[in-house]
Length: 117
Image 1 (cartoon, rainbow, N blue to C red):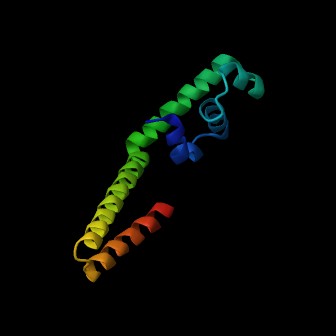
Image 2: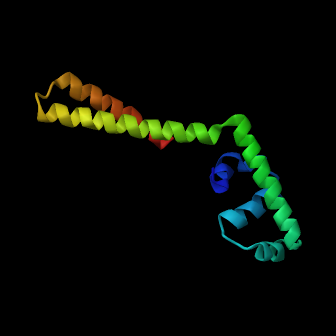
């Protein structure tokens, strides 16, 4: 799993310095040398901070699994949306049963609401 993705879920659980350094490296695409210069620490200190933060993020995901669960829910919603749209389309092409359209639209409304969160 990408570290920048895990940072979105668990970044607040890192120290401020770890979060800043890892954000510079992964999100801002700064080199170790650039980060070291900005933060007033050695290049090795930056590398160590990044490695510790990566390790903590991966450990938190192993224990909590929020990022993996988020991906599964997002993928499941996409499948539900596609199935409801196919049902709606098929119903419109065939006999157009009102109850089917209403149920398909109800499913799609729930999916849209969940996708906002």
